[in-house]
Image 1 (cartoon, helix red, strand yellow):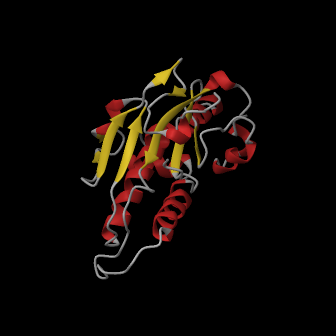
Image 2 (image 1 turned 180 degrees about the vertical axis):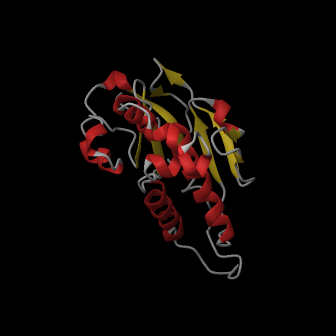
Image 3 (image 1 turned 90 degrees about the vertical axis):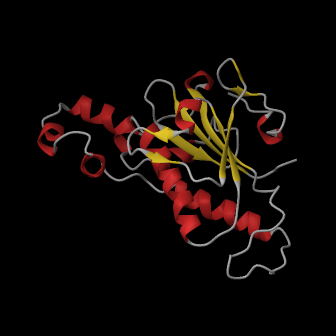
Length: 202
């Protein structure tokens, strides 16, 4: 059974995203601390308000994980845990502030953003799906540039994101494989290979 995975969940109303090492996020309000603005932090109380966005899987199936410069280093399994911990730390980093996102992705002019009413600014800031996927993709690219040998699987609630991230036009590196999440009622994962996800309580 693959015990290591990273779960990204989206809020069905606000499009906010939280990242967890566990498939069970309801009641774990500490996950909301991944969101910088206290005014828009979500509550993780309602089971019907959250659904899986993507699951990063395959850490435990790696036979070994080595630097390309040290191909014969033996593995005791700790490298897989190190990759899991390292990637989790990277992807749970807070997103840049909204104005920085506007500049980075050329979403609108700074003046247009600053003229938005407060409720529209908050709606813009809460829409985290594409910025978080862009962040995840950049994490993989960073690891690849660090000459780390690994392959991982992404299981998608929406396979449209498996080819290109619209906000940045980034494409996923070749060492990342893509699969479809099998969901019951939109949020219960039933993929047999995702053993740790089979008991998700959403």
